[in-house]
Image (cartoon, rainbow, N blue to C red; front, side, top):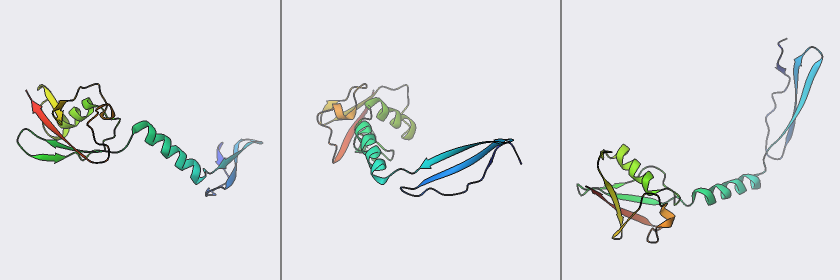
Length: 134
């Protein structure tokens, strides 16, 4: 027998507790008990996460060549303007050396702001951001 053998292969299901005995050598062993999470606890954690990252939002880039590109990455209301510019650079071949400006409803968006800081940003609908490169 090796120094670390376990005598349990039970699966944990909702609201169930499982005890595992682990042999750690010689006559020494440790009993560990595991309890599953209740569904309500999981839902509470998801609600907390949603509060931290915000709502998922839809962003469409209006690129300088006249094309429209719906952002395929997950964007949340807590995402920053700078993050959106990073996406433009990595996904849409906008050179990092160029000055990128994002415009929403005629308002230039400042880098340190999150989307939830922008009063004209629509959390429930589509947001078309005009991309200006200088």
